[in-house]
Image (cartoon, rainbow, N blue to C red; front, side, top):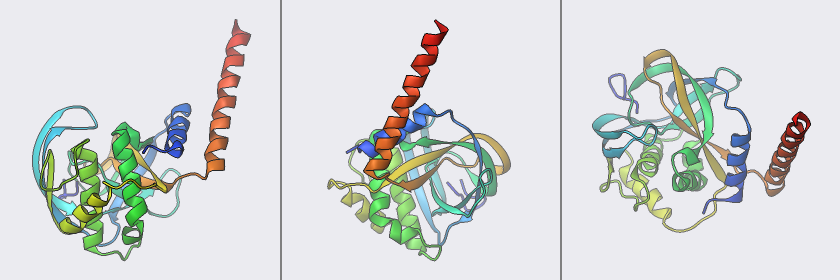
Length: 241
């Protein structure tokens, strides 16, 4: 969370993406959180429950910035991309750099991964522009925090383990209410998880980013590739016998 004083139906495509992640060794990239992506609001959050990242029991009450981040992968280069915070447990100040690994959002939970993808499918147009409003940016961030931290219960920003109020709160709740109706997701959520802090104030943040769900023929080819990889490994093992 960015604090104001140095602010603190699981698809086959998702299964294929998770399998692809599992088949590849995790490599760390240098991720830089540079600034807010567009407009940003403020939020007050209260949480009492389990930290999804390390399993610790946490109680906190925080006030800070709420909105998407302008983010860079300094290892691969390229333009800035949009990310949102999934870490309410550490404070930081722009600019921070860390070594991160990219993992499927199922590391939080299967439900969180699915609902994050559906949230972005429904409302990416409201947040992906660098001229999007503070209300939209903050609403999306609040919804992300609710999905990540509330667990399997009904999403309600005013009840449960995670509570929040602030810019775009009513809009966030309306977006969360939509998730009670089954719908297909066109995006997969992935998490940049911090492995080591490199520079800046605070601890950096674990971030959620979104990618289009692969076309059916694409993830079918991914599964075929995984099968060939497994066959190759078995043959190598047989040759060693």
